Image (tube, rainbow, N blue to C red; front, side):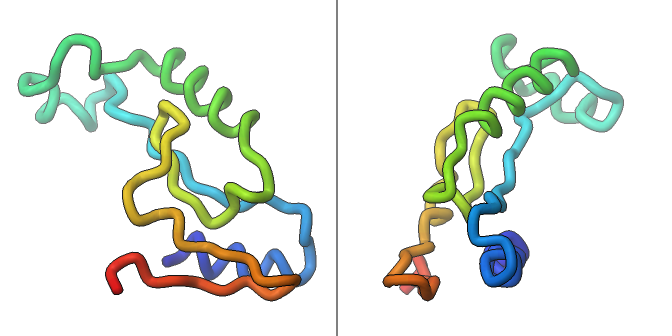
Length: 97
């Protein structure tokens, strides 16, 4: 909800700005150590790889992606595509009904 609200506020003053969130995935840090034993080997990323993935996602975004939540693989999280634009006025559809 924060990303959507921020996009609404920014869209009024900066219509070309892109507001989106990117989940980095599980990065090999002390914070993720308790969760690492249950991960597949290819699901744990180095800090450098995480940064590379996030930069790749961000560099590929367009204004149509604003108010979205993306994975480190540039995929939308389920339910995060709820922004529709009608003319110049943003309208939100609740994905939960």
